[in-house]
Image 1 (cartoon, helix red, strand yellow):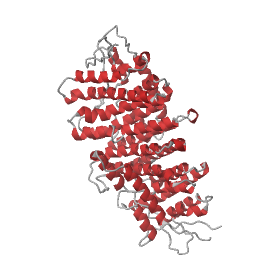
Image 2: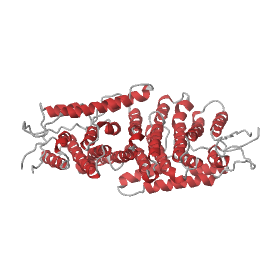
Image 3: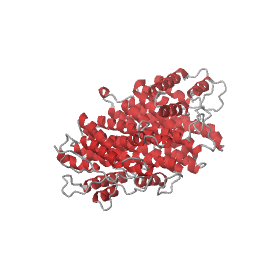
Image 4: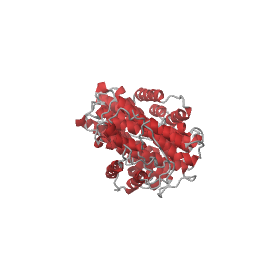
Length: 307
Length: 307
């Protein structure tokens, strides 16, 4: 059988995939959550044709869902900062992964839209609060809200994300058990043993064992949650849920490494690490229908080659 | 029929009710959330005998539940601050009100224990973040954690509270719809149109229309939520839920007024305001079995008198 290898190169000029990813992540100059810049060795014969319209359409739908949920309306003191801090925050592809995972296990997009929106809000809240910690050191951000507003609005985004999710419960669908399970997944991923532990380690320990102490807790746990949550809402089996959780973990680690490697001037080969992570991610997609896997696997764009 | 009147006096020296309330709120020197110091005109013939052991037992059970949920265990960097910031925060009687409301509508204490614990955590998170804003001005707090730890640990307490609630779902009890409804209630009460709006107004506007702009959003909304949530989980009717929501609102307003009146040197009669609020609160308890109402009504201790 053909082996799966991922070639993940930081150089991306003129690459259509990166262009698409940039459209998904337009604010790449912000803080440490730089967008995923994964790309492929150009290969016009690749079996894996990247369908960028797939990711763009997902992100457009999440945007539309959130814009409807957070219109700029009175009281402006509340909704204007929340709107801006949500949409100005560094974007992440994790909410789109949540939708893609839902579709991969046979669910439809609507079933995961509230969860994807909640993930986007939770991430924006974490980003906003991280900016308070980093402000004055290396962070620049394109808004004029002071730290009190960042603090309080960020605090508001966390419960609001979970409220969106809880209100998506439809008694006629008999899906309240699934939604409660998703709330547990998200609260754990964002909480003191997930995102916050990573942020704490980042502030406290800085330089030591970055992948394990920071990337795994922040991007890794967040993307893992997105994959699992999408699969839960799409009606996946327990095996599928765990596979998509691990797929998300490795995609998140790729994201974390790409975001931090150059900034931290790590020694050693980033490409080697990314290749390993990419391979581990793709391995989790074995067993799914390979036709359906094309879209989601393009988050770790691959170059199939016969070994 | 006898009219209900509430006599709410700030003078409390030697009063056993205040002593009990102080045991419920031991940290009364902290920030603006001073404990409720409601008391009664002494009346040995009062039909309403205050059963302080009722509130003490409820608070002890919530404490025990939370201490089991947040033991001090590795990683200490995570759990030590969370433990301290939860138990050192200004306490509030709202979680106990949640349990009392549940019992009033015929539920048992266990049904509301996770929600009461979640309310306690959410309140501690709000208190912790409020301290970041107020630090350096008037606030003193008895711990040595810096603002970064306060920020991140507070952020962790919000999802953790909701996680506790979501994990309390018991499929055999068929109560997941109720728990989702409670999650919506709590996220709304803590969010941008509730507690956070009040905190924002407090920081931004300080002096203007304090009861409407601050107390109603902070203490009012929080206690209203506690009453409604207890009634939902105890299986109350919609009418009972709304009555206990309004009861909580007025109890919370009493709490807010007592916390802030002297500090703000308001003109006018605090007693008059408290009497009005107390009467409005007690009016909501009409229609419930008056035997069962004794315990919960002692949050606004009353002096029944025949008009």
